[in-house]
Length: 182
Image (tube, rainbow, N blue to C red; front, top):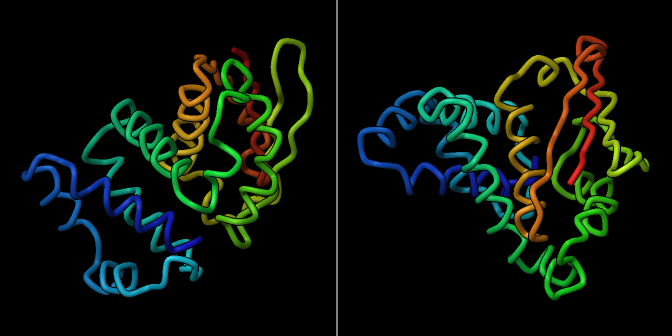
C-alpha cells in the first residue's frame, strides 16, 4: 500500500472529534503509527498497517460514516499532484466513466500485491472486477466499504451519484464484482 494513501487515512483520524480520535489511536499499535508517520509518501507499507488503521476508523465511525470519510478522502487525493492532471477540469463533469476506466492504472499506483482491477462496459454503467485479492483483504469489511466509498467519491467529483451493487459470491476465492450505475 502506498504510504501516502495510508497517511491520508491517518489524517482522517486527525479530523475526528477528540474522543473518537482517541479511540482510533488506542486501537492501533504504536509501531504502526510510527512506521506510517516516518515513511516517505511514495514508499510502500505493509498492507496490514493500512488495514489496522482502517479497521479502527471503521469500528469508531461505523459503516456509513466510514464510507463517507473514504469518499471525502478520495476527493482530497484527486487534488494531489499524482492524480490532479487527470482529475482537473470539466471533462469529467457527468462522465465518471472517464475516470473509472483509469482505475486499473490507479490501483497499481496505490496497491502492491492487493489484486488486480478490470473495468468493463455494462448497460448503463460499468462493471468493476477486482480479482486475485490476497486472503488478508478478502473478508475485510472496512476494505470493501473503503472501495465503495472511494467509488462514491469519484461520482461526487464528477457531479453524479454512483450506485454501487456488490457481488460477493466469489469473495472467498479472491474476487469481488461491483456494478456501477449513475
